[in-house]
Image 1: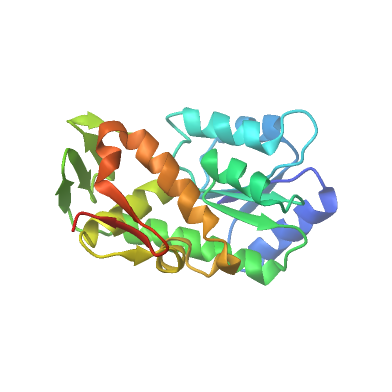
Image 2 (image 1 turned 135 degrees about the vertical axis):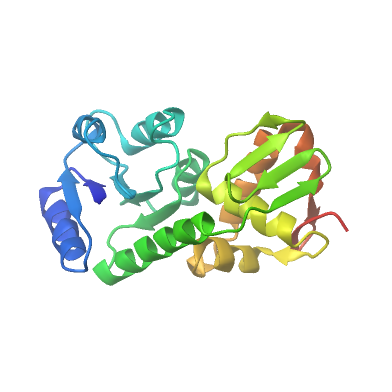
Length: 224
């Protein structure tokens, strides 16, 4: 089930229609209140969330989702008419898994949804492998990260980013490589997205954040 939270009825109905005709179950919701009411009944596989909504906007709704234990791991794709880098960074910093700017094609949206859901399935099917770097431990099966034995709460994208870096410890991964592997597409060369996630990841890791090294002009690595 995919929830589409969009106050524009025409856009909402088009998205729901497209999802249903692409093999997905979908439910259209007009605002955050309707979303949280629906969440009390059933949790979706993914949420499409408009930013520009009357009342509680999408960013505030997203922050509520990320602070609730039952919804914090549900992937969220932000839908918005705003296209500035600042707005994208705010959405990504708040825990969005992807960001698509209106107007967008329905097939592009479906492609983004498939990419996010595919990564979740891949994560669930990982072997039970534990990676250790300094005081940071990452377990793929438990989808768990600890620093000095204390669990650190990461978004799906932050976990995937740390996993890719720590799995390739010693190798420098360029921003373009990280975009392609984590987001599943070029993202129009907006490598700032990677920098934002690295910044928040380091912050959340606290004393373990130093394991992520910046290779100026190239990308990032762990160790080496």
